[in-house]
Length: 141
View 1 (tube, helix red, strand yellow):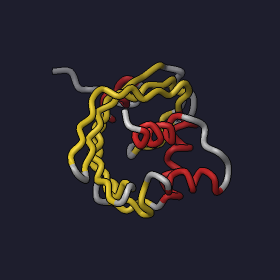
View 2 (tube, rainbow, N blue to C red):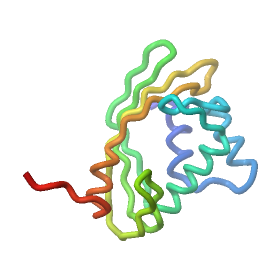
View 3 (cartoon, one colour):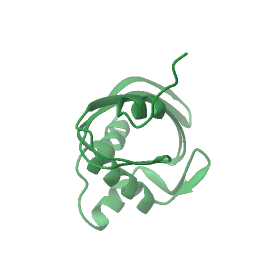
């Protein structure tokens, strides 16, 4: 795994420093703003998302499954693991802490220009995560 990918993944799993230091760390990896699935996110918004994830999950681990590099693009496939200890913000509303150990698989297609991520296409198994947390139930056939 490259130094760049290690720095990227650490931003999401290691406790972030307070104040502008966290913002500076994100700006070393991400363009500001960066497009995420076609929506512009500022570095501040990314820091807020990382902090929210770190409040929602303890013992966060991102296990890299596969990576592919071509000029200007990197694709990473990883498993995100953690114990659900705080409110999880989702498009369906907040999910109260369950204490459950959960994991989900994520695929990120990263566009990289001048050493910064400028665009991200994310495909994550959010439905599986919500089912595992008991936030949604699948209909029986």
